Image 1 (cartoon, rainbow, N blue to C red):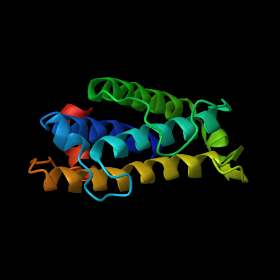
Image 2 (image 1 turned 180 degrees about the vertical axis):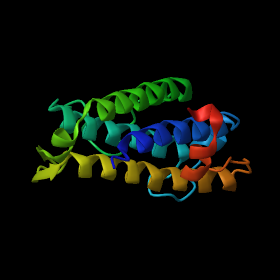
Image 3 (image 1 turned 90 degrees about the vertical axis):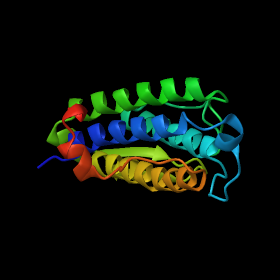
Image 4 (image 1 turned 60 degrees about the vertical axis):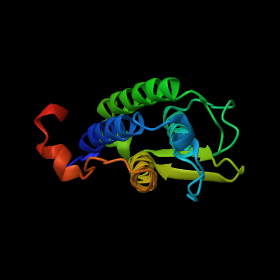
Length: 166
């Protein structure tokens, strides 16, 4: 059973919840270095967008020469980052919905940011992308909690039972 459409919908839903929680922060609190791998909430959210663009570019056979590093800041402005995140989440949903079982099993060849070559089945790239999102959203959740924000649950079972997420 192909669970990737479920994961793509969940990914968008969880990102919307995280961005809504972030919207109550002051700019100073949003950008504060909180000791996470990318430092701040802002930097972590930018990282997630960069990595999604890189992986989607690989999946679609589209070069992304404008993406030069995993810590690249695509948007300094929260509202612009949020808008772009929403568009990227929809793009990911569209890509997932366009793939049949044959396409999901095909090898995708690409280069990592450091130049190493790789070939990975398309379905495993998508699982990696969703897992990466979950990993860093967990970090953002912790940083929001540190900032005193009441973050809603991000569990996939909550998404599956949330009638507004459909």
